Amino acid sequence: MPLSDFLAALKDNPYFGAGFGLVGVGTALAAARKGAQFGMIFFRRNYMITLEVPSKDKSYHWLLSWITKHARHTQHLSVETSYLQHESGRVHTQFEFHPSPGNHIIWYGKKWIRVERTREKQMVDLQTGTPWESVTFTALGRDRQLFVNILQEARELALKQEEGRTVMYTALGAEWRPFGFPRRRRPLSSVVLESGVEERIVDDVKEFISNPKWYTDRGIPYRRGYLLYGPPGCGKSSFITALAGELGYSICLMSLSDRSLSDDRLNHLLTVAPQQSIILLEDVDAAFVSRELLPTENPMAYQGMGRLTFSGLLNALDGVASSEARIVFMTTNFIDRLDPALIRPGRVDLKQYVGNCTHWQLTQMFRRFYPAESASEAERFAERALAAYTEISAAQVQGHFMLYKQDATGSIDNVARIKE
Ligand SMILES: Nc1ncnc2c1ncn2[C@@H]1O[C@H](COP(=O)(O)OP(=O)(O)OP(=O)(O)O)[C@@H](O)[C@H]1O
Image (cartoon, rainbow, N blue to C red; front, side):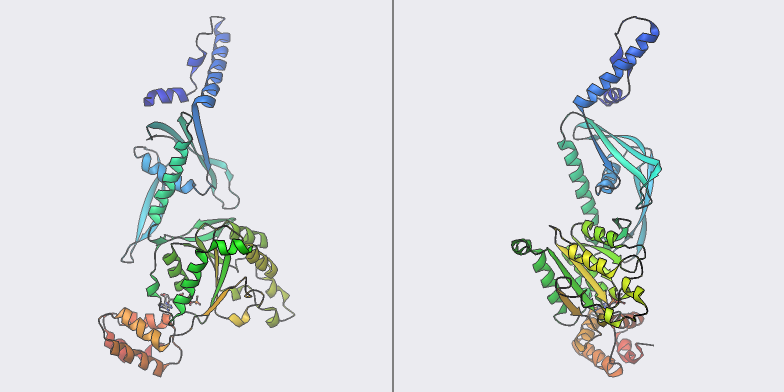
């Protein structure tokens, strides 16, 4: 059907009311209007299909990108600014144009489709503070498969854009929203942990992900908790980011000291976390300290800083049940400050100390940073570093190397100044 005919059919057109006789102009017009309305309703019900997608639906953002791709000739646009990190590490600002609120016509699957994007000025999503929006697709025919195809294409397009990148989500109201630009996946080899530590965690997570049946057969909730503990700057967060990249997972980052976090909200967020994501609760000690360490005169500390209570946190962790593998990582610098109830098996199934650099780690880091240098130079670096300090974090070593980017000998000679 040509576009003009399609548009004509969509408009409220008195055509359907024509031919009702010459009963008087007023009556004829009213009859014509009624006829038109009836005709349109009949036509819509029987020969048109529509799909409404509200902005709070997961597919909404994918669909906006899909529409942008297909409505290339539309002149009415709105902009969304994002940042993209290139291989070199440089960040580029990217403007993505989306069709503005209003009507757009798309030719897809040998059909004309009207896409109406609406934005409610009066209605705001109370949880996210953003205006309420929706897009409605209207097409002639009865075949719903058209919409299924569009949704699948939109999802594939979104996945393609995220390929090779790790998406970070943060909690906004009761939802998870991507924040910042998707980061280039960090390779696991770029995080140098003590020998065997990486394998221990990666093998455990992979085994967990590939074995849902083991859990269902035994009626055990399909979730696994990990705790990485140790001094700052030793690679806990970097390792979790690299692990997410290795698995092709995203990260849902949450701070338990967020004052707006309540028991219900945490519970809800853990339940609705995006598929294939790692939930990361950083610095859990900052929100709750062990009951045993608590001064009795300050019971508030145990209740958490916001409206989240300790028992609420335990319940939320226990309640995480999903057909999807649910992986929760917690990090802390002070494991001894954590309540034993929080880290008992079932809530934390694997605990791993991530500590300051060992001799082995120092040699590995040196060789990674200065690939042209020999193994004996790496040994010399590690020996001198550990002779000068008993405790050096990987972050400090990395900072030191950055000072001697092109000068491996300088980095060895000045290793005693690593903490200056
Ligand atoms: N083991 C490591 N191998 C390579 N780089 C590391 C390692 N540990 C830390 N770094 C570097 O140091 C910086 C800080 O590391 P990271 O945030 O992962 O440490 P952390 O243990 O999570 O610290 P905190 O306890 O303060 O959160 C990052 O830039 C990271 O690249």
